[in-house]
Image 1 (cartoon, protein in one colour):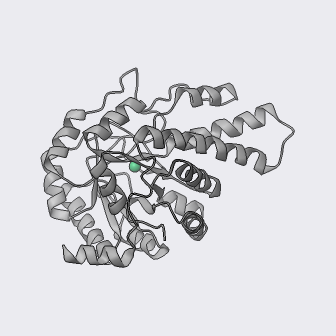
Image 2 (cartoon, rainbow, N blue to C red):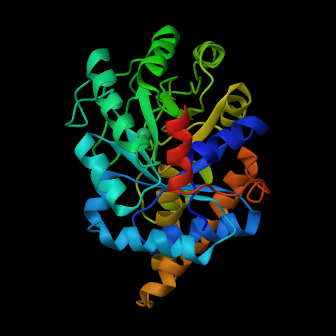
Length: 332
Ligand SMILES: [Zn+2]
């Protein structure tokens, strides 16, 4: 069984100082692309699903596509992860679908937009930790808020993480990993002008204070090459900008373990489909353009896995199942 807990995948990565990409999915081609890349590079992988994706796919379709990935790839540790859970109720639903890991984003209220208080965040995160750990499921939480929207989730205000508060939060909630805000944002338009600086001083401070894996949301690079392709074939994305790969590698060195990638996958797919439509207007078989999108996405993720140092770590450990994880949480 290749289903693994995010806790295990991330702690193994933390030990060896490499990053693991968490790739968002909505459909079969995305899941297949991720798994082909993981297989090709022998990398552990986190497949993550937002509430929007669950709604789009009517949950059951995506649930079984992810299970297909697990059946097809018994040698790759795969975490099924809920991205930006907004309530205990959503988390319970994901756990019932078989997710091995969930995120509760209590930095925002249940509407996924309004910034919450510290006390609210602690309270909702604690309730999720209690429910999830009792079932062997790992929990990611967030402190500080990112800018930008992701599947309609997010605030337009940015609050960088306060390191001391992050330490207090981890102590009070017992979460397995923590997303922090150091200047990244969701979406394809992360920076205005030329500045792409991240607050590495905050990351350093947080790393010195807490020892659980740290997560970077909004970490797509928005490659110029893909933006140029999209625009060349009729798209309109002139000011798009992301986090340079070098900054992500620096972040991994300083203690980031989980790197969330959604936008870049969307860009690779859009560029590929636009190209087929423009160059071969006579084509109408979805396999012609979705297949091309799938292979371009595979190429992108292979590059990510290499850049993050994830390659050749799939066989470092044996994935622990829910029962084993449950025992581990109880023994703590
Ligand atoms: Zn996010």
